[in-house]
Length: 108
Length: 117
Image (tube, chains in turn blue, purple):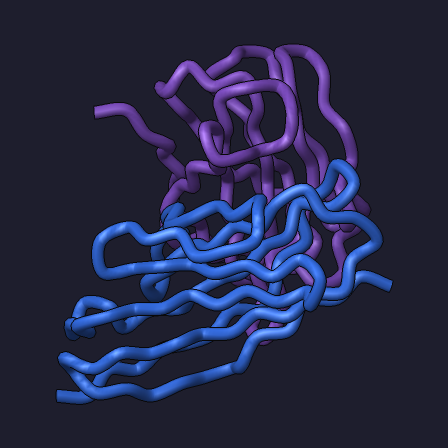
């Protein structure tokens, strides 16, 4: 079967750094997406990794290891507005497979 | 500003009634998608359309129907045959006809929360 695992919920402090992990077992791999979704709103695109390594985009970075079936999203200098769910999705054999998302709670 | 509009945001229906969820985009995107989001689960694909007048079933198409008569519009009908219709429904679009990628990620609407009692 095809499976994507993410922690259900994480808590972090404003101004700190947090790493949200995503592990996947899929029959194929063409790329991995990260999306941010505030409660009751549209998911918004954060990043797309195809090759191994770290890609940085402002306060957010995304890492991929294809051999380990592993990715993480790194959020730096956390702000209260970063409180949201973070969705991982793998592009595998002409379909997108979604993880259940990680709810990130930021405390002052 | 371009975007995807889903309406209404909240919808309530009695069991046994069909209901249609609206999705309109002005991004000039070729492909459009309907997803269902339930607590504790990943997004599940209901239907998708890569071109006008053509659409394909996703993983959970039973009890749903769609049409794509115009590029801008992709309405979803939840029929009485859908056993558990209460959910958050997300419409999305992407630029090209192939699967989304870095230069053509999915753009989502703000969703419609359907409650059937």
